[in-house]
Length: 509
Image 1 (cartoon, rainbow, N blue to C red):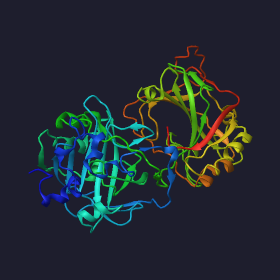
Image 2 (cartoon, helix red, strand yellow; image 1 turned 180 degrees about the vertical axis):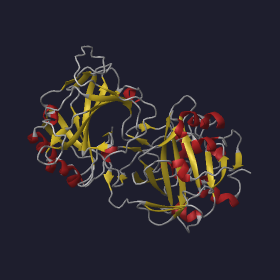
Image 3 (spheres, rainbow, N blue to C red; image 1 turned 90 degrees about the vertical axis):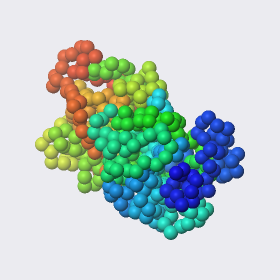
């Protein structure tokens, strides 16, 4: 039974939620009415509020009203009724009136009808519809929900008649990301039609560890004809992690490729972030002024920026821990291989090198038995923290001269840990050679407290992740290694005494 042919199936599909063009009237490729010509169909596809968009994080505004969602039956293992290949994409049809979404800044309660997917091709070209700072993920999942109690026509005609929750999907080789996605993709077929779901898979099973409090919000449209401008979009910051082999099943088993619309102009619209999207304060350095090499690094790296992670007034917030100990703060110096572009570095296992320095109160502020003399220049920290309260918006920039050497003080730069890891914020690229220094930087406690107090953000850190058989290396306590490729060799930081920085709040890197 064709999904677009019967009115009785209106509530089974986004395609039937609005007065869509027949599936044969449009396509993603291979016909006249491909995305570039959708506006010719006589629908709003050429309007000013179209989706998807590129989310430019430097221009995002925090909205304090975007608080936690209430999800009803997302954990139920029996809400996915069937899987449909309609010739354009794959949809999971949900049981009627079972799944609901409310709060999270939404204007009312919405009843979820379906999940559907967007992807690229079988040659590993990504296919998410939304992008973040130009980065496109391998896939994207949409949970589509019209406003509860609205007729089909009313939902399509209301500017907030439809709520869509968008989840990026990232591909990795972690065997633990098989699970429910392996069961779901077993139902994929290249035959148009409907297949009953016999496995118990919940929406929560598919979403996994995505933090539902961290999301972007904007007003947009459906991303297929008729492109109705009736959608409240929620795009979650964290991606769903799915095994690469399962991501590859979507184009391979369905025969459908490049199932996504290109990003559309923002046309003056604003994109908002929930308060939980807590961007670290970062300082961006002028190009080619700071370099890092040696210490087991196989390449020379150019420093891009440094940023901070913290907890709250009462809790610690370093991202790394040592023997289960979490420090109050952590500073990251982010470096890119000089022979690669940033895009290339993000896709290369050692394309980035991040130097992690723990930060804790200096002597006199705490009663620690592990105090050392690695105290920083407090004047430069006062200068840096003086801007923290001024950086109220993610897009705010302030220029000043900041010395990285002065920030680090006389901390021991010879003893450190080394492991292969990832960025700690989405897109979480596994492209980082991590160096975590053993000795902490000592800073006045009052200055440290300015980060949570003056930014109004707390717990700005990612929880620790499983090691998955990776090896953590350490330098010897006293190394005479002369070979810079030896992990025990001292790390050479060519830090200029004065570096011009732009301090801002940003979610990049």
